[in-house]
Length: 546
Image (cartoon, rainbow, N blue to C red; front, top):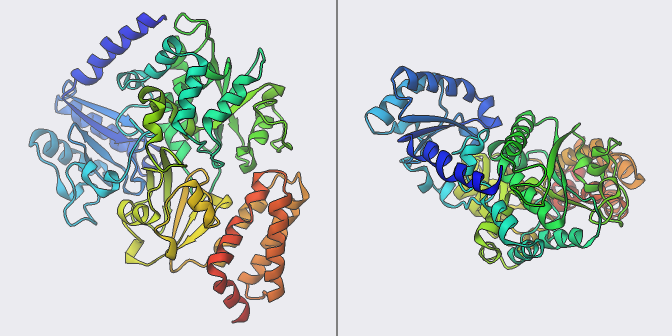
């Protein structure tokens, strides 16, 4: 299929079918969270009810990806009014169809957050949960069918790729990404444009683009939800990256625990190939690019670039010393670009709207938006996307609805097992790379676990250390032995058998492991320990002295 044929599909068939044929849309969240709550039964019942009432020519029922408020599911969203119903089960379907479609009025008792707001919002976008957010990477998640490429095309899908192929040189694309100041969302926050430029400069007949969808942090589900909700956005970002750096082969690496994400990205690849958006001489140009999915076995260390590369090559997933970096010698020794899911999902709006537009969002050193997975002792857990620089207080209390049961906020763990704990006195910290580092934590990939006064911070440190100990690949002694020693000392303190000497040993070990480990897993493993010692040292001392 050439460019003209694709444009015909986008402007005619897709637009008419998606936007003009149906007066009403009922979107059922079919992300993994809502599916676990029974969303597939709700979807089937809703489709049956629409057919029974003879409304199938007026109402489109759409199985979408994650809408955000995961613990309120199953969710049904009515468009165009953006009315969201929460905790829907099959017994509610007839009433929702009758009231919303026939009587033209919502059922207030079923509206989103109806059980916690004095008066729930009919237009969910007016609720603080959504009003404080800015969805860029998550755009279209929750109101398109991720298994239909036509839905994506109808929402400007692959227009950025078209623009890149026919209006921009690779240098132009890289310049736009650099101007956006987009930083890698996988945890390290390395400038994306600079990484792309480095791969571009290496001359090689074979280059690779890898999408890192491993995401093994406890409490993290950002990348999984993006892949489930809008896989074509990630795929388009990979295509643009491949064009910019000169790659002709791509891999999406996803852990096996994400079967729905795997299913939807594989389907997206097949659909893109069918339309000529992947393969040889894409849209009649000289550019060729193909993508395959590689499934990981669930090793946390494979989130590290060199370990991930080893896994794709069929080897044991263990990290390698750097340099050389993957940009120079990566997959099978060839120049390789690796970005995570959220980074690739942010590329399309940068190309469509310009790097300058994106750079003006967020803070001077942390541009754009960030997706967070809210979990823990918070009223509204789920997936959110906010501008960089949004305060922790706004996220916890305005978006997240505060602590469960009216409890008192104690701390928030950011960055997963590689991050640290932020205490209540720093609730007004800006959620950006520099501010979190100054408190002994990191942004990480976006996990955000909220804790109340019932949380024991020594036990929190022990839990994350146990995770890192179990997930250590064992290649280097500092990580393999050091995490075990730190875990044993923490367990001793948790068992009320610790001494002041144990505390001194913990701090000494933390420095050794942090400075001497081969890869980021070991280097960051002491972070939860060090941050809890920094902000909650009295809890350690009380365990020992009392």
